[in-house]
Image 1 (cartoon, rainbow, N blue to C red):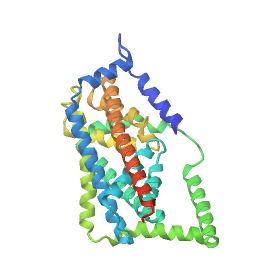
Image 2: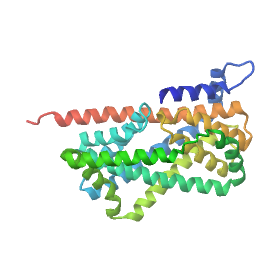
Image 3: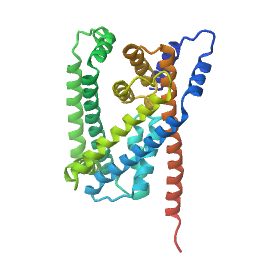
Image 4: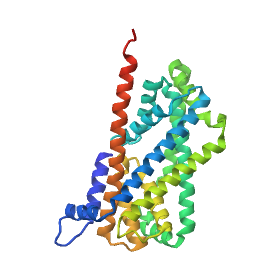
Length: 319
């Protein structure tokens, strides 16, 4: 995964052709020209979305009999984001483990709720992509046609047969392990309890509202960053929606923090859909993603330190 990330970043930088100027200097000048006020507002909006996600996670945990504090939920969530920077999807497990250390919430139960969160996020992403297609159908259709997936491979052996066989083998192995491993059965029952918590929510409407609000804040984040750069300032809300959809797909790739895939797809969208010069598009994406990464790292490191101090304090014997 790291090798793929490095390769994609290299390919993206390779496409940055600037005459008489070093590539790093070009990106640095783009950073100097952008409006830092909009970037600071974006950082506040980003932390607000993470806080709202922590609130939603608490809602999912409550029906399982685990009432956790908002602070511990937020700390665990931010640590998960930090771990995802190094290990793709590793943050989903690490945030559950951190919550266990802080609140003694069973990892298998909290992980079940995280899976539910991801399913809800996937639904929101699909809806977002659908809206962006309605708004910018002509441009997006042209963009997809240029990708030409038909030439990606022509294997005579149907891939779906391999998937079905692997699924069948995994099912047989799972049944065998469940019948012969009591501990694994307990873990899966806990996972099921967490996954089914969504059907026992006290206020399902509020949960839906939080989910929509989280993704609305993500869109606002993108909008403020677009406003921060002179080259993208006049693109408009519909363009931001389209770029946000492309960026969300890129971030979903199993790469550290979406690095590489984000730097490949989003500049392509800016160039092909909105005629932005390629060099400006690449510089914009590197700064945008870099700023997001800095926010995640700073928030994650602070959360890691605070969690460590809380856990140590809890272990200190009281007299």
